[in-house]
Image (tube, rainbow, N blue to C red; front, side):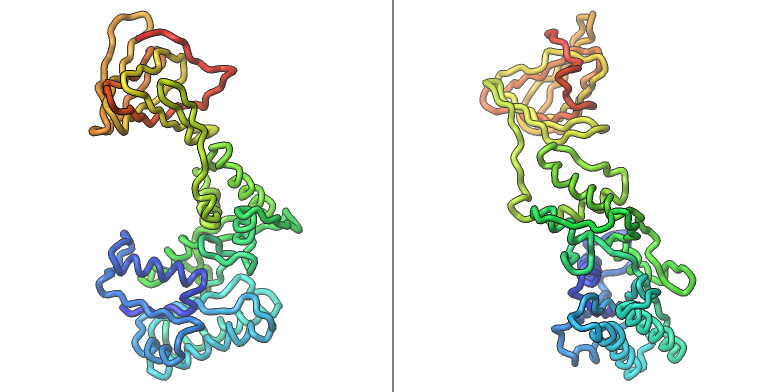
Length: 382
């Protein structure tokens, strides 16, 4: 299969091409396409126009993602959105190539403005081409698309907000109550690859991305602002919400390189250190504990609080004893064999570094963040 992608260096094009290359190289699974027989032709503004002839002659499927969103002159809307589509279809007809053709339109095609008119003209052109040639055509009216690699300060509020907030640049929200309908770039790419296999989704005559998120502009801005604070608070977003998960990944893709890494507070004493990594409102706390050689930590128990210990480096012993009994349950642990040990409520417990030379490094999860006002922690040796 030979696939032509026009606008290959644009936002949607770049994401689609990268995934098609993943399929080619066997890095992408569950797409039902053989990468061994996949060829991707990439065409963009800086391509040699003669390449379009070669690609249109050989293509088995065309994704026309080329277009103009914010030109200096409004006349460029029609040239970029209608004009190139016309050239593309004429070139396909030149070689009697009636392969399927997809075109990226916009929900603004329903609007009476220069951009909408140019998109609507491109749609009509494609439908007429289908009637004339019998070729299958797929017209996607995309709502707002967001995700990594989208150009900020251009035509995407999400990209602009993510970029500016990540770079400490003020944002302006003229009307926070404006309702946005958005599709995530990965969902767009998944749909386009489904279309490649003849499994596109429709709403009447137009193709559509089935996963759409609806949220106000103000709520988007507040969510992104909350992401900015998380390296300080050690919080993470509510990833059970699909839109929040996607928006957080999008925000991270705009971080400047000097914010890829941030310090954590190490609580250090002569026994070693204890460092919180993540604190969540409903999923507990994640930490790293380092014990010096020969050191015993813990020697306490909890009513309700419970923990999971995973030794990732060193050699140690975890001991538990039920309060009011004498039996001690022992677990010898090592970074050579990764396993989780439960700290059971009502059992006093400890962790002992058995090595005389190496630190014992333990990853710990607790079902609640530490609250000094209600620690639920009571000293008692195992």
